[in-house]
Image (cartoon, rainbow, N blue to C red):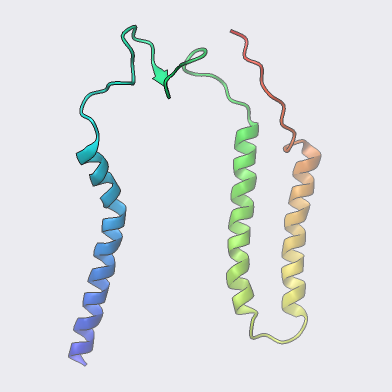
Length: 132
Protein backbone atom coordinates (compact mmCIF):
# COMPACT_ATOMS: atom_id res chain seq x y z
CA UNK A 1 0.00 0.00 0.00
CA UNK A 2 2.81 2.43 0.88
CA UNK A 3 4.66 1.67 -2.35
CA UNK A 4 1.53 2.51 -4.35
CA UNK A 5 1.19 5.86 -2.55
CA UNK A 6 4.82 6.74 -3.35
CA UNK A 7 4.28 5.80 -7.00
CA UNK A 8 1.16 7.96 -7.15
CA UNK A 9 3.05 10.90 -5.66
CA UNK A 10 5.83 10.45 -8.23
CA UNK A 11 3.25 10.52 -11.02
CA UNK A 12 1.72 13.70 -9.60
CA UNK A 13 5.17 15.29 -9.31
CA UNK A 14 6.07 14.29 -12.88
CA UNK A 15 2.84 15.73 -14.29
CA UNK A 16 3.27 18.92 -12.25
CA UNK A 17 6.84 19.38 -13.48
CA UNK A 18 5.73 18.63 -17.04
CA UNK A 19 2.94 21.20 -16.79
CA UNK A 20 5.32 23.81 -15.39
CA UNK A 21 7.79 22.96 -18.15
CA UNK A 22 5.16 23.50 -20.82
CA UNK A 23 4.05 26.74 -19.15
CA UNK A 24 7.39 28.34 -18.38
CA UNK A 25 9.52 26.65 -21.05
CA UNK A 26 8.52 28.99 -23.90
CA UNK A 27 9.04 32.00 -21.63
CA UNK A 28 12.54 30.85 -20.75
CA UNK A 29 13.39 30.10 -24.38
CA UNK A 30 12.32 33.59 -25.41
CA UNK A 31 14.23 35.14 -22.53
CA UNK A 32 17.48 33.38 -23.43
CA UNK A 33 17.28 33.68 -27.23
CA UNK A 34 15.67 37.11 -27.70
CA UNK A 35 17.94 39.92 -28.89
CA UNK A 36 18.92 42.35 -26.17
CA UNK A 37 18.56 45.49 -28.31
CA UNK A 38 15.30 47.09 -29.44
CA UNK A 39 16.24 47.09 -33.09
CA UNK A 40 13.54 46.95 -35.76
CA UNK A 41 11.05 48.62 -33.44
CA UNK A 42 11.87 52.25 -34.14
CA UNK A 43 13.82 53.33 -37.16
CA UNK A 44 16.33 56.18 -37.29
CA UNK A 45 13.61 58.82 -37.65
CA UNK A 46 11.86 57.74 -34.46
CA UNK A 47 8.71 56.52 -36.25
CA UNK A 48 7.50 53.09 -35.08
CA UNK A 49 7.50 50.34 -37.69
CA UNK A 50 5.12 47.41 -37.51
CA UNK A 51 6.14 44.34 -39.50
CA UNK A 52 8.45 46.36 -41.70
CA UNK A 53 5.77 48.88 -42.69
CA UNK A 54 5.24 52.41 -41.50
CA UNK A 55 2.13 52.99 -39.44
CA UNK A 56 -0.88 54.78 -40.88
CA UNK A 57 -2.57 57.33 -38.66
CA UNK A 58 -2.16 57.87 -34.94
CA UNK A 59 -1.46 55.07 -32.49
CA UNK A 60 -5.02 55.04 -31.15
CA UNK A 61 -7.11 54.22 -34.20
CA UNK A 62 -10.71 53.42 -33.41
CA UNK A 63 -11.58 49.91 -34.44
CA UNK A 64 -15.08 48.95 -35.41
CA UNK A 65 -17.24 47.12 -32.91
CA UNK A 66 -17.64 44.34 -35.49
CA UNK A 67 -14.40 42.69 -34.31
CA UNK A 68 -15.67 42.45 -30.75
CA UNK A 69 -19.08 41.16 -31.82
CA UNK A 70 -17.44 38.41 -33.87
CA UNK A 71 -15.25 37.52 -30.90
CA UNK A 72 -18.23 37.35 -28.54
CA UNK A 73 -20.23 35.21 -30.96
CA UNK A 74 -17.24 32.88 -31.39
CA UNK A 75 -16.76 32.53 -27.63
CA UNK A 76 -20.45 31.88 -27.05
CA UNK A 77 -20.60 29.10 -29.62
CA UNK A 78 -17.21 27.70 -28.70
CA UNK A 79 -18.24 27.25 -25.07
CA UNK A 80 -21.61 25.83 -26.08
CA UNK A 81 -20.09 23.29 -28.44
CA UNK A 82 -17.64 22.24 -25.73
CA UNK A 83 -20.67 21.74 -23.48
CA UNK A 84 -22.22 19.31 -25.97
CA UNK A 85 -19.42 16.73 -25.72
CA UNK A 86 -19.81 15.88 -22.01
CA UNK A 87 -23.59 16.02 -22.37
CA UNK A 88 -23.44 13.52 -25.22
CA UNK A 89 -21.25 11.23 -23.12
CA UNK A 90 -23.55 11.53 -20.09
CA UNK A 91 -26.61 10.75 -22.21
CA UNK A 92 -24.89 7.83 -23.91
CA UNK A 93 -26.29 5.30 -21.42
CA UNK A 94 -29.75 6.86 -21.05
CA UNK A 95 -32.53 5.20 -22.99
CA UNK A 96 -35.44 6.95 -24.59
CA UNK A 97 -36.06 10.14 -26.52
CA UNK A 98 -35.57 12.65 -23.68
CA UNK A 99 -31.78 13.21 -24.13
CA UNK A 100 -32.22 13.79 -27.86
CA UNK A 101 -35.02 16.31 -27.25
CA UNK A 102 -32.94 18.16 -24.65
CA UNK A 103 -29.94 18.45 -26.97
CA UNK A 104 -32.13 19.56 -29.88
CA UNK A 105 -33.73 22.17 -27.60
CA UNK A 106 -30.28 23.44 -26.56
CA UNK A 107 -29.05 23.67 -30.16
CA UNK A 108 -32.34 25.34 -31.11
CA UNK A 109 -31.81 28.06 -28.53
CA UNK A 110 -28.30 28.56 -29.95
CA UNK A 111 -29.82 28.86 -33.40
CA UNK A 112 -32.18 31.54 -32.11
CA UNK A 113 -29.13 33.47 -30.89
CA UNK A 114 -27.68 33.32 -34.41
CA UNK A 115 -30.96 34.50 -35.93
CA UNK A 116 -31.12 37.36 -33.42
CA UNK A 117 -27.54 38.42 -34.19
CA UNK A 118 -28.26 38.19 -37.92
CA UNK A 119 -31.34 40.39 -37.59
CA UNK A 120 -29.36 42.96 -35.58
CA UNK A 121 -26.75 43.13 -38.37
CA UNK A 122 -23.84 41.62 -36.48
CA UNK A 123 -22.68 39.67 -39.51
CA UNK A 124 -22.62 42.66 -41.87
CA UNK A 125 -19.06 43.63 -42.60
CA UNK A 126 -18.78 47.24 -43.62
CA UNK A 127 -15.21 48.28 -44.33
CA UNK A 128 -14.12 51.40 -42.51
CA UNK A 129 -12.48 54.10 -44.61
CA UNK A 130 -9.62 55.91 -42.87
CA UNK A 131 -9.47 59.61 -43.47
CA UNK A 132 -6.05 60.98 -42.79
